[in-house]
Image (cartoon, rainbow, N blue to C red; front, side, top):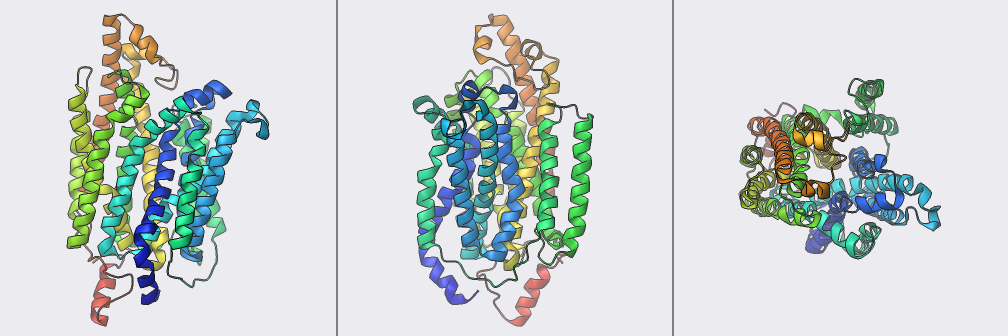
Length: 527
């Protein structure tokens, strides 16, 4: 990367950032926006027993493709690869909006079509998420990167809350199909902005794609996601189906390890994990996804059942969480840019997140909305300390040529952690609920709460409703209590992260002695 190439890229950083923020918003928003549209989709297509796959297919596509997109960006150049991901995402969005229409065969196959097209959309979304972070890594030196990644973390916070709100509004006033069509004009704007303004340094790399490694990794991840989705719900944990998937995942991942050690250009360079900082931050990312996404999945349930909020109102009640995360992300990003120091933030963030989850474990039937809002502000603040610093540390731990692979791996471990968290906490919730009045009143078989009807809940006699709400509140608070056990590991692991000086340029700088010292700091032992 020539110095003058970097200079020509920087004057357009604000326009480029606008396009990147739109792309990240689309990827995150579409993971949340569908939840409020699902009842209408099921009402039109049927297939209630398969409706969760509308969400799972998207998550699966995103998780499988994330490390592959990252490596492709390293090999072929991030701009073209990222634009390809945007086009694929928009193509999938258009197909999702058309699912079940007469142009595609009518409503008889509508649910199958929608699930398939959501997987296509998820494949594109994986490229958006990792591409945004890697492109910022190309344009901005690590010392200045915290400010911009803080903005991206803020966009992620907004999307997490805005998704249900936007989805509810669109579904009520237009059609569930516009939950997908809305991506087209926004994505078009991002595409035009990035084509016109994005100028990235060119890298010359021998193009040798590790297709066998990509296939084995995809099989292993798919099996893991299916285990966490089906285990305890569709099939018992000890059923032949789950045990068979576990064996398939183990065999695929072991074979993947052997292949990656010999591949000239591995999809996921295993040597990265010999770097202490990278290994630690990948584990922290897994735990962050585990505790954060797994536990947060139950906040809307608490708000809509115990607190009696509507689907749209429950989105509004999540605003304190977004506020805490947004404000802290921006402040931390600016502080890292100003001081160049970052090690303290994942330590503080992990501790604050654990406190927030501990506070949420106190939720009960009579907890006021003011109290729960305060608890969510604390949790959001902890997440704000962690969201961009984990990516920053991962990127700063590797050479520039491995930036895409590192960004992909960091995003991948957070996604896998979230998938495991949702599965485990779902099982904990179901087990706790089974022995309560709520479990008896709303038995959903293997899926606790699957048969839950909020309108029926409100029509129950006062004493019975109080008992049911008590059981629900107890089961939900129990989930947050378990999440604390995983969250407390984050500051412990972050304590061992080595503070490597953030580069002020994406080029090696300084005297040969200083360069040698920096290289030694980034050596696998980190010593």
